[in-house]
Image (cartoon, rainbow over all chains, first blue to last red; front, top):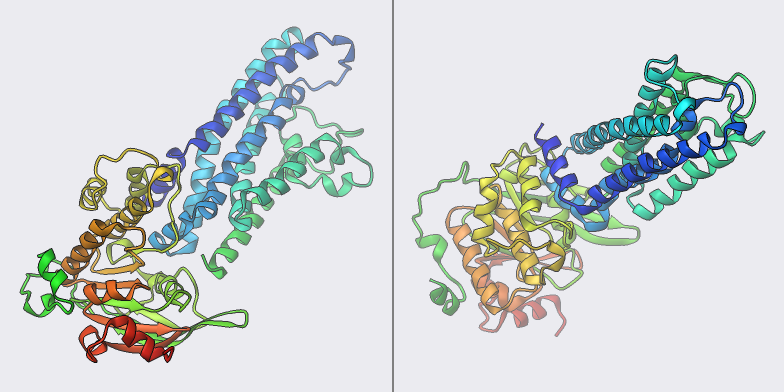
Amino acid sequence: MNLLRAEWTKARTVRSTWWSLGVATVLCVGLAVLLGLSWRNNQDRIATGWDAVRNGFLSLTLGQIALVVFGVLLASAEYSTGTIRASLAAVPARGRFLAAKLGVSALVAAVVSAVLVLGTFVAAQTSMAEFGVSFGDPGVPRAVVGAWLYLTLLCVFAAALGMMLRSTAATLGILIPVLFLNSQGLGYAPGVREVAQYLPDQAGVVLMQATEPDAGLFARSYGFGGALAILLAWCAAATGGAYLLLRRRDA
Amino acid sequence: MGIRLLSSPVPTTFEDSALPCVLPSVDRVIEVRQLSKRYGSTLAVDDLTFTVRPGRVTGFLGPNGAGKSTTMRMMLGLDSPTSGEVLIDGRPYRTLDSPLRQVGALLEARSVHGGRTAHNHLLWLAQTNGIPASRVTEVLERVGLGGVRKRVRTFSLGMGQRLGLAAALLGDPPVLLLDEPVNGLDPEGILWFRNLARDLAAEGRTVFVSSHLMSEMAQTADHLVVIAAGRLLADTSTAEFVSAGDTLEEAFLRLTGTT
């Protein structure tokens, strides 16, 4: 409890936290309104089986970058500023330090993601007007929870990766291309897709859709449960790696 | 007090002080046992063995690059020794509960996020060890940073050192490890630190202070641990070390065979 409070104090007393979370909110919710209006005015492009939930959540794929920046900075700023030496002198048990760090990243991300997902959903579906769906429609609650879990776990993954790589530039340099290139293309390219579909953002796409396409571009060889397992596996791998490196490396 | 200490290079505060001890334990010795640290082909610390005792200021002396900071990082469990160990009150640092209440450390390299205020930096540190927030204000006053609201990024070197000392004092620890504490302090700050170190030792604490400034150490330390190129050269009282009648610099250079 003491350690969680301390990590929360660290997070709330630097400006980058408020900047990144503010930008995430503006990007997700603001862009959702624009995308919703865009869909409404391009009705001829809306085919049958069109998933209003997934398309309404498109802005999350951009806004997630700001949330990832928050998660990475929480970890990498320890190293760029030298705070890590003070942290480990105060909390020499590496496992407890890492648990508190990732715990706070998870708690903050869970609260912020809830706001982002609900705000984005309402903004997008309202601006889509008659094409929008409401919370009670089939598949919607699961997709909303899925989007929330995805953003929360992605932030934890980003923080754990930041603890492994220690550098803001290196961590973002890996994460941003993976999160963008994949969603924007690799995940849909034949041949590459078979492997790329197991990357975190692709699991996210499956988590935040109301319908599971069984063929075509968006088809995946796993469902909601599989996607959640994939994300948890990424988090577990990054956390395990961060713990081993933290124990072995000199601070 | 300050004037008296200034004029007496080998003060005797330890022997003649009969201050009641308010610390949880007076016998907080630091034992460095056959400590070595290798970086690739460089042996930064080479088989160091010495003991730091409470109630006096022990100076850790050596030229730049002698291995002082590496040794101090190993004392704090930040770096792992290649071989050997450091025990504080019989235990390795990494196994201490609430370490800030047992060992206060000032590290040479800055270890503060520049975007935080001094108060917020000490606040999270205090929270990790369950130290009440009121203590933050206390130590900031004690080091002369009370009422300073600006971000650490804008601090001068001297203010940064004072903040580091505040962090070391936060848990009211019986053991203090201070790496180059007078670095960047102005003459007034140096005198202030000298009195602080001597007061802490007079309270029965174990005070271990590294420096590459010989003349400064001659005036602050009762005992000296001298190293060069990672090896122990001397572990003796300051009086004995400079007994030949010359300065500490001359004694040091004679010992290292540089002259």
